[in-house]
Image (tube, rainbow, N blue to C red; front, side, top):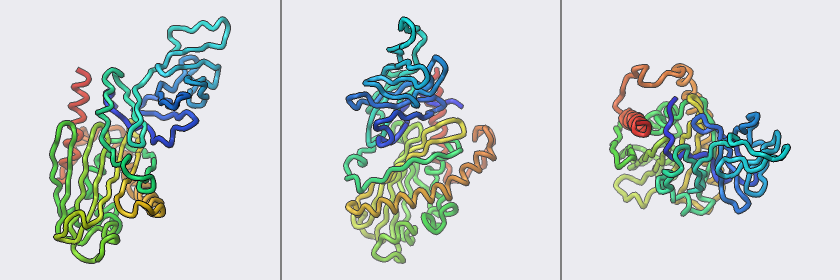
Length: 340
């Protein structure tokens, strides 16, 4: 499978990279992420060029990482800086790739392509994650055995909630409503506005009268390659949005391989932010919904498709597919431009 190189991928949440190195495969590239003595992040290839041991099983020594097998040490640029054997000569080939890396919005972002093009202003603006106190933010990581674009489609077409999440996130109202889809620069937006319907169960229980008609909004913003924010809220019909409830979640799909994906989830809310019990409830809800409902169907999809590209199988189109198809076409165009 082909992947964008000149793009920011979320490789980890910040809490995953503390005192020990973290190994992770990103777009089929084995990567090790570690902190230098001053706390600065480094990201380099994880496969030692001597006998291909994983560097993430080694240890950080000052500002470099030491291979666990024969003690070669590598710096932030991927070059070997220490050979403890013989006369200590370092072969020119003793190096691994060095990657651009940045810490933003409680996440560790990696740039697999040309480091000179690794502009941190291109990292999606998820600053709400920084603005809200810790007890108002939930973060989690899960892995799925399905292509990252299938998981991206899953968020860009929220009508699946009426079937996959019936009784929790779906009540039939989304299927009846087509999203408005448009582009701004490299971003794609898909918005659902549902007026005068009973709120979906997850929102209804937070409203003054769960049975009363409500106005709801579900707003997805996609940034390449698989970074999505989802703003969801509801208010009693006819009342301003500010009087209702409002929550922003992040669904970030980072490809591991052609058939596996790192799924990073976060939620930042502006209601009951001082209640840590809500954090745990939200974490359990998303874990149960993804692991028990989304993950099985997505992985079953992948098995049915094998390693075939979606479009090569000539899928039937439905009206709500507009955003997902537009994003896939946009990825294709970006890849073609990058590899001219």
